[in-house]
Image: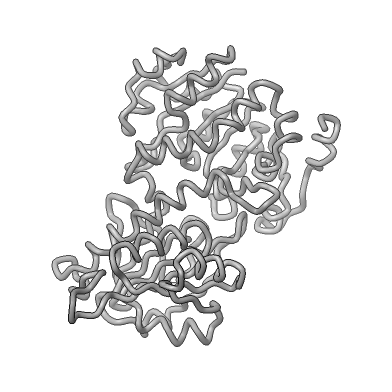
Length: 376
């Protein structure tokens, strides 16, 4: 099987779909991996690193896409990449198709592309194996950026996250007790903040309570509690996720108005539309804006800030799926690996996901269960 690894073209997106270790695993099994020139440079991987493990360097995105049966990306394809899709190939990426532009849907359908979305690859036990490492990275980065944004020169409240003897610690409100929420809680607790986690799932709240030995307060995320607590937060972290669906708005503009001037909102649900009414996407080059006196940090691809670590983490999680896909074929791998199966949003250009169909106001166009049944 032939794989393609194009260079990411979104602003400051330095991650790469496959590291040299991932290329080595595929090439050593007899498969060909075409890596675009400098695709890994932003993460510290030189072309020679890929060539030394059997990768083939190509000098255009058109060739990386055009030679591949399977394209391994990180970020959702841009408009300039749509015209490069090859008829009938598979593309793996953080697609977030429920909030993507119609022209991407059209390009995938016109070229009969199978689109596998990392963010909805979900095992039978509910774990999201490809999204989880990026969520962990974002959670660990949260206090680094929040601490800077709270400083006086940045227009923040001028408070220290961990406080000092005789000076109160900052209060951090985290919405969502999933992987990102727990990772952020661990990072903020480590720096000394007072942390409160809200979620609608009591099982997750119990997990947080056990994980931190009662050092993190927990509450049910209902409207009453949100209204009651939002005004106390120095930092509000949105870590709400409904796989394959738009994130629900939990924090209204009126709630934001209750927050103190110079406090910080970090809406990590922004790649699924955001969980704060006043949020809008920003970028690593221009990460913040102020609304209702509150600094908003809404960067969809924050893990790109640590491109090398994030690329390694993505590769570690993704490699078993790619190896199996290469060894026995796409349909066989879909039949054997529930997470890969659940990641299929379009199969050969046809809508294969109920959630995507609902978001688009359309019907499912292909029966995936029937397609993979013969391989089970």
